Image (cartoon, rainbow, N blue to C red; front, side):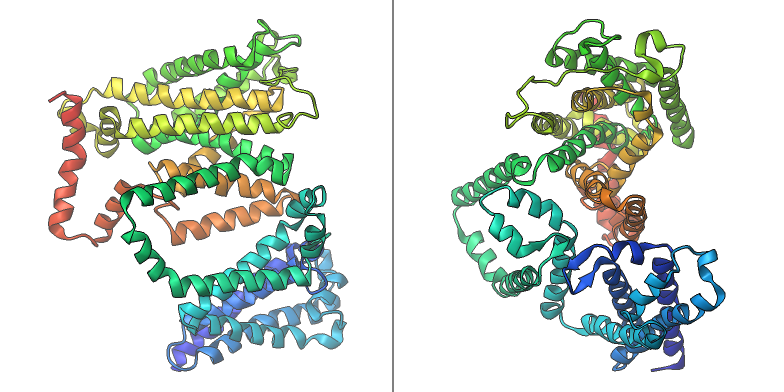
Amino acid sequence: MRENSWSAVVGTGLLGGVVALYLCLAGLVGVFSERAVITGIISLGHTLLVLAAAVTGVVAAQRAPGAGRLSAGAVAGAVQGAFLSALVVIGPLVNLRAVFPNASPLLYNLLTFGLGSAGVWVPVLAGAALGVLGALLYVLPPLARDPVAWTLAALISLGLFSGLLRTPMLGSFLAPVGRFLFGPNGLTPAGALITIVLVAGWLVFWRQQRTSVQARVARLPSAQQRAGLAMAAVLGLGLVLALPHLLGPFVAQVVALVALYVLMGLGLNITLGFAGLLDLGFVAFFAVGAYTVGLLTSTAEFGIAQISFWAAVPVAVVAAMLFGGFLGLPILGIRGDYLAIATLGFGEIIRILAGSDLMKGLLGGPRGILNIPKPIELAPTHPLAGPNQIYYIALIFAGIVAFVAVRLRESRLGRTWMAVREDEDVAEALGVNLVQTKLLAYMLGAAFAGLSGAVFAGLVGSIFASSMQLFVSINVVALIIVGGMGSIPGVVVGAIFLIGVPELFREFSEYRYLFYGAALIAMMLLRPEGLLPSIITMRELEVEAGDMAPGLAADAAPEAVDLPAEQATGS
């Protein structure tokens, strides 16, 4: 390799060493060492270091063209391991624990596998070996690399969620299977072996048979293809409906929370994704829906009507829609960052008023509204009691709202919103009524958020102003960006990724937000268009990147404006 290639390899090892030191000194290795991925073999803390060294080897192999990729991986991994060896040697001498509380003898034993100061060579050798493994994964053909990568991902995932899977199995006829596959704290060695065989075997088989299977499916008559898709949809729906009974009430509550954010995301997707109007005060409409249901249904001090949940939901939706119009009217002429600041201020005003002494007599102030009944009163032993009924209600509402959002996107109004998003001045010049178009976007988006707040009130059973934080609005904006701006399936995927997965990692306390942020950064670097972007977004990115033919790029721009404007004027 050339000298500059070696410099890049050593630089990769230095960067990997810094990452490994951060994992150790921030406490992740020590805390996560208490959780096993494979019981008695490897902990989650060691897995973090293994992944860091393997990724270092992959990056070093990328920067070392030619036949020296494995050597590059070994060198970079050894450099990274040298940082950990230096930590083991220097840490006790200078009392690093005074500055970094996690630099403890327990950490040093973990890094040397219990050998203490006599094992300072262990991190270097282990780093070199793992660097070679990472480089080997990089040079392997996809047929061999993909099964290894997906098998490792499956092992880590099953080890993390072993308790979530094992607990419901122990309460059913699958108890022997649960004990065989999962230990109290991770996969059993037998469960890990079975996972490796199944995942790797399936991937190898699918890689070999995919072309022939796709060809056979393509030769089927259209009726049989539609029947197969319908059967797959029915099986998927059945799995979704059975999920709370298979995995317990905790998963039902997490999925219900995801569905609530899907409702809000679909509402903001109209305002931001379709019409291009950034709203950072979206939680205000959520609060309006929640407080409306609380006031109308609560049997406590601040309840005013004690009507049923189902009668209060339409009122909450209408109230949120009216508030959307109330917000939209004064800010119709504001654009860009100023619009975001104005909506942010509106959301904070609603939150502060709801928790203030000024509204204490009406909304309860800091005390909130209590004793909000469940949508359906059931005995505690009923299969639909507790969060399960909210799970199904939230899924039904999310399905209805998704259907409405799809129809709106394909309608004349939806195309008009997209014209406004692309260029307000051009859209107005071609006959689009900006006041009416923007106001409808605000009101319909607010209605969906109000519906989400109404279901939230039934889920929690109480409403407090402290629940209506700005972070809720930020989460909704983030899930739209992560899923794909303007994409309805992207809203669902973004909600699962940003809301559901962190909830499943709640046992890791504040560290879950570290991985949350790292995943967001990685996603923005690797998939800036979102996980499931809309076709229009993909087209725009291709035009910006210059990947489309000049004639096609020129033809795409007029269509995006002329068609909505033409429909908006009724011609």
